[in-house]
Image 1 (cartoon, one colour):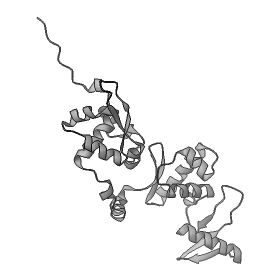
Image 2 (cartoon, rainbow, N blue to C red; image 1 turned 120 degrees about the vertical axis):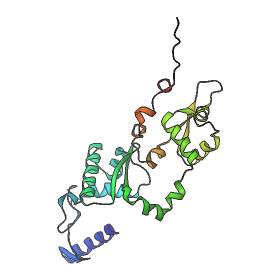
Image 3 (spheres, rainbow, N blue to C red; image 1 turned 45 degrees about the vertical axis):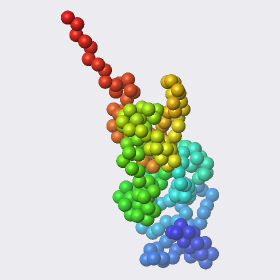
Length: 238
């Protein structure tokens, strides 16, 4: 809303020749767009320099606002018309500095293999009420247990999951796949060639993880089975 209003005010200011106007108790200083990509679109008088948006910063911010999934740095370069990935990363850092300095409710976070503009955890309760996310994303304890096993031991067969949980997991796996959190990763080489299951990119995005190494205690719980297996004590021969 602010962006739309400021754009129309910019047009009006340039049309009438004004250099500023008083709106909502603040003095706005407007600047027309120039060929210089680093020039400022508009500035609120008294704004700290770290919070001023350049056109490139504004484009990256707009792209991330409307995206419903994580965007890779290369994709941001294409959509926001940037020079390269290094510039995209630098602009994202600048935006985060502005958000932190201004105590914004937003921050750009790296999730999966891309970036998303996310609200801070402080506001999750209120956003959950607005979008009814708790009802949509709520998983039963059995489903959460199954998801945790897949996340830490993937790729894993259904038989191995059931051996850990000691109950059948076909229905739980079906539910997790329907929600896009788990997928079939291939076939095991054991007898019967059972399916192997793994988590999806959507799983990483939903839980705000950069990768599987970001899981709690990942170094310990994601060790190979051979390391985690309990070996028998060697017999002592007289």
